Image 1: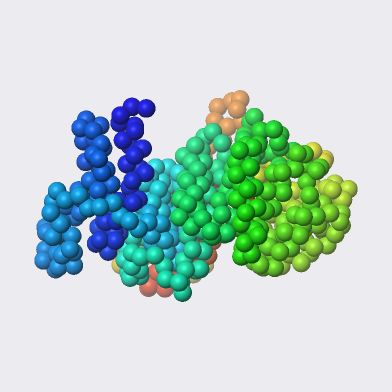
Image 2: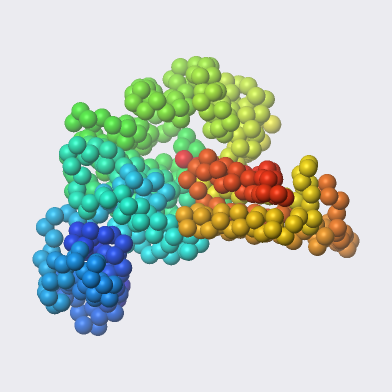
Length: 404
Length: 131
């Protein structure tokens, strides 16, 4: 690794901690971020030539604090009074490395319930993940100016909400943690959905989600839902190499080459969820992870423990009331009790999932199992006409073609 | 979620063609559209938007892959559906895309009366694999 590359890696690792510390000090993530950007830039140019300082975090915080003080001086007396503590800091002082977990506090702030997930996700990637706006824009396939505006809006909204830079109180803890986990989950699925090859920038989002969730798990090792979410991500990521064929075509779970699954990730995911479940605070991420674990532990598709999956979907359905979970339970029901039982369950979804292509896709699949190819073809085609995913459309049309 | 919002040139019953509007009505319509554009930009929702020239400047091209391409010049009959412009947006939900379309449809026409022009809201296909 070159000196420059190692400095860049180090800076990315330190950035959220520094931003957290500076935000804690000045109370405004927007001002803090500008100052931290300047400090990181200074480090990126100085450190490769002059060497990394003994206390790199302290160096960055001091430089950022100085930049902010300079900026505020220019801005005038009103703002200066608000950061009197920061202004008193001698320019070359080395503040101690923060003893509290500023990265985690920063993550809680970026995933604040005042933000919609669509704003929280890029802000989190920017502030906690240390990605540039250009990188985030590429990953979301939008122009950089659009993404810059979205991030700026998110910061303004946090400011307007008056949310302090502090860990959530006991009373708001559950809601705030749920919000963080939801953002990380959506970030993972955003990247996990990317088809391979041409969409490298998108697929890196799932790696980033895993990295951030590992960070949360390291800070909150006893929280079973955090462990459950990390397990869920790892158990899905493990199947990534087998999910698409040579031409990028979708390979369904039952037909995947399981020798391509990543055993190390599976082992880690299974261990995490196995340790979390007995703690008694069962949540939806743990249940989803448990379902993924049952799939991942089956040596062949035929050896899948469907009765256990069916039971887990039953619990998840009661917990969430989500019709998509019911749709998955119908598949499990078909595998345990036969396709007719699965099809009967689908009837309850005609209303809540009206016009949803996945209802047609599952119905087609179960009709195919049930030996009714003509009806299956009709529903595969119906689903193909409604999906917005090109890969899914090709897959559904190929299934229909196979039956005609 | 990305959506394309499409507006076309087809005649609206009771509303004269744009070329016959009073200048102040054209100005009011432009201001309405400009405000929507600004709002979408500020929200970080706008990916792109363009207005297209009218049917008079259009050419229609067909080619059977063998002979010379057939090129037909405009203008084309009023009844023919011609794309007038589009907005490409990236929004939180389908509801939001519909909300933007509704605002666009309510743009003022002659005398300030909303034209209620039809806006098509179309999800953009993704190359992602659906979960």
